[in-house]
Length: 208
Length: 86
Image (tube, rainbow over all chains, first blue to last red; front, side):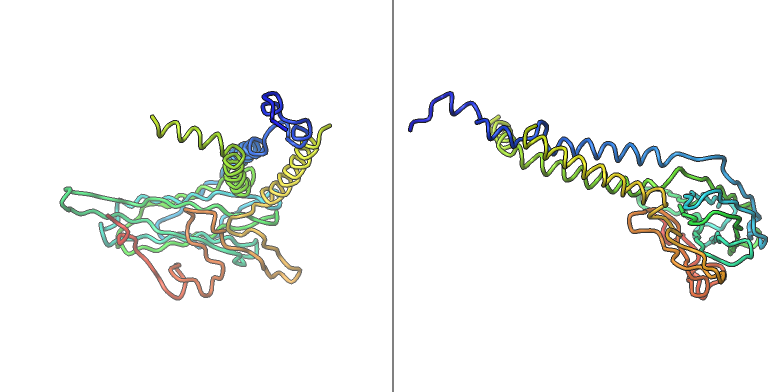
């Protein structure tokens, strides 16, 4: 039986019935946008930050730190000016320790500050690291202590250490990952669904 | 309602459930240092995790104070950073 123009152009009713009103790729793209938006909202600050100022060698006394809710997420920013450290050889190592109210250590993190300079074929250069950051989660609410210990190799280095601990709304990481996965899936599905159209467009572009 | 619409509703339902699962991880602070830890009745702590591989740029994490390296009171010290210069 010859195929008529009408039969060729118009899709059959059954074929239309199994086709969704909008493509799955578009749905996944929308989902990824919602995930990225949620991640953005969850990265907002929640409340006022706790600011601690300590001497260059740290402070053996724990600073009180109240966690109002279970699973609270915090961003700690530790800063110290490296200006007084000897260039290329000086360092200041800082460690932040999360302890319970009985001074039992739970976990800790740390980093260092330094400065370096020199001269090469491009001319003089200098680099410095004056801060580091760490996000952490405190699973159970309650009263904690923040321990701050530091050590450096410069004899007269006395730049104070400033620690800022800011509570965040939640962890944006899971939504970032979900958004990236959904975005990749949307692109792949969109490509497969519209493969013919993509090939035609690419061929037209190649022809000029 | 066409078969295509039903399929689309099912896919949307799966995504809504997926959103809920991701939300539950997010509000529990997944991915950062300390996630998943708990305090036992005897005062001991366990389950505190290091940052996930998806968290870039954070400082060094020391989960066990007695064996950490590079910390002020640890068994070793990595010290200065100028080696990371230009």
